[in-house]
Amino acid sequence: MKPILITILIIFCYSCRQQTIFESISVGKAIWMKYNLNVKTFRNGDSIQCATDLEYWRQLCVDHIPAYYMINNYVDSVGLLYNYWALMDEREIAPCGWHVTNIDEWEKVINRSEER
Image (spheres, helix red, strand yellow):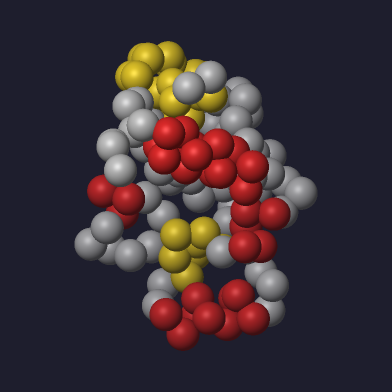
């Protein structure tokens, strides 16, 4: 399998509420954030619960509480780990102008890589 060709198109997207600029790349016709999501609040400014250890993380997941888990050695390189409840919360975790990737979008990227 040939590696996927990703054209890097530098676009600075300004998030309305969080006043953050997100660098992005173009993959085919889609625009993706260049880096993994690393936010601690929902789009409306509400805080997302932080799990400080694995047991607390498990409990938040079981209780269906939106949360992120900060894996200290990886925060700078991969961002934060969010549970399903944070991703699906109606307050929206993705910054203004962005959305959580759906399965169809992932499949397009995978299919594109398989075509090469």
